[in-house]
Length: 226
Ligand SMILES: *Cc1c(COP(=O)(O)O)cnc(C)c1O
Image (tube, rainbow, N blue to C red; front, side):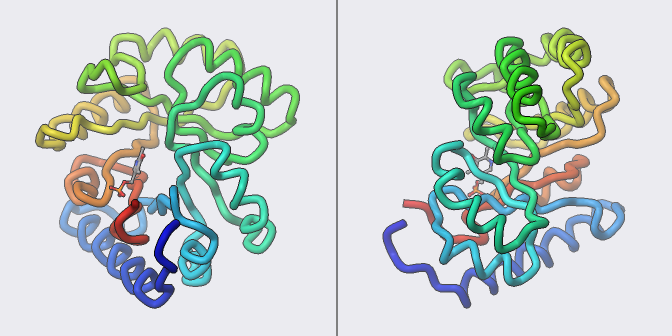
């Protein structure tokens, strides 16, 4: 949050991204409007987010619970139909705050977190929808569950009455992303999970071709992060 944001440039980039998503849907033979844009506003303040809200965007992604708590309650009061997605790793001791603020938590990735979310949902009386984050590149430094453990986590989630609707992935940066997107699509079909959150500023077209229902786009809209 260093340079003052340029609202005109942000709205223009937002419109451009929307157009590119529609083109990617059409060229993949998918229905126009079938892909939801999650505008990733991490590191950007309310002044940068407001032009995107004013342009009609209602789905946003944030990485950190604490950062989101500092800016989103006020913005959600201004734009009540905003849907907020948590797309960064969640510690169990922040589960309650996450359940209070977020409408979708995309990063369920371990049994301990499933238990913490179930307890938080019970206490808060709010039921965010959940996606399971899958670590497709088996990268030690990344969060996400191994593909082979999805079935057991889903069984646990169902036993805890959690509403798991899909899968999310962040492919390894150095690889060509398409095969990871296709792999997530296969896993979604295997477990009958409808939502697939995959694709970011650099690779959302490929993700849409592979079946993404949600693309998470930050820098192409808000500009470079510092
Ligand atoms: C930051 C982030 C994004 C957006 O990345 P851009 O390259 O800026 O579009 C998407 N998904 C996750 C999980 C992120 O942390």
